[in-house]
Image (cartoon, rainbow, N blue to C red; front, side, top):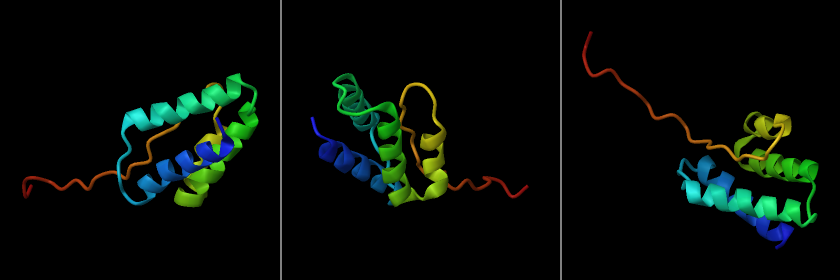
Length: 93
């Protein structure tokens, strides 16, 4: 396990959202599990993990999107950052 692998995985995760692509839940669960393994092996602290996630998120999606990770308490959870699809009325009323 390595921090370089985690940084690459997080970069790809957030960059997909920045490009308007969806990310399968399995990918999110894999990254969360990888983070937990680093935490359990004491290769990473919770504060370091939160900072790394926030930094990777901010690099792709900006400061507003990263705020959720800086303020997150408890278990580390990655969020979906998909843009909302445009919704148009189906009737002329």
